[in-house]
Length: 247
Image: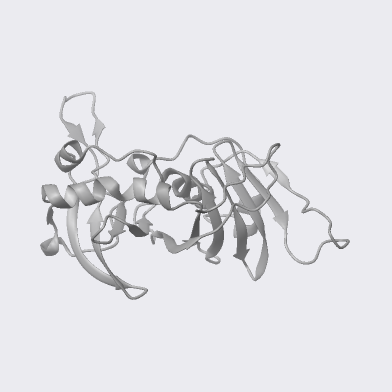
């Protein structure tokens, strides 16, 4: 886990800035340069609906994979985008445990059988770090929105069509997200990576099936799969329950 084992990365660390797609560094992992083209307005409208579709499908079941030097970290969780909370299980280095996260931080509990039947998990709470696992967890929470994007503004910010792929029996169009432009001190023109580090897999109705995000230059992409299942958010380590029951 970039100099730390995956299990240590889940358990330790200090504060980190809020992760947004615009702050990721790198390029998209999908789509050859000669396949890329600017999106049409109709395609921008589909892209603009993606985060809303995720929000409305919640609580949503997700599968997260974070590549690392020593081992991949896998997380399966239920995400409640209305409550900004997620809870599930993780597996790394042949061991597993439970993980819960919200806007403020991460809670981790050891896996295996509890010390006594019916015992509550022994949660350990901490702030976010800049570790790729933490950045991926924050990315998952950022993928839902209670309103659509502005399609016309989105089309002007540089998203690209990358092609089509099959996934779990469905056809998805791959889009590179808006370019993460930054402002330089010497020019008023935006400067930054030429391509977005985030790739969205979107079906014909605007539903989001997968997101890939490159967290470091030259690194393998983090993958977030939306499995299409709805499930209530299980009880977690929060002071008050955020029970959401699927319709």
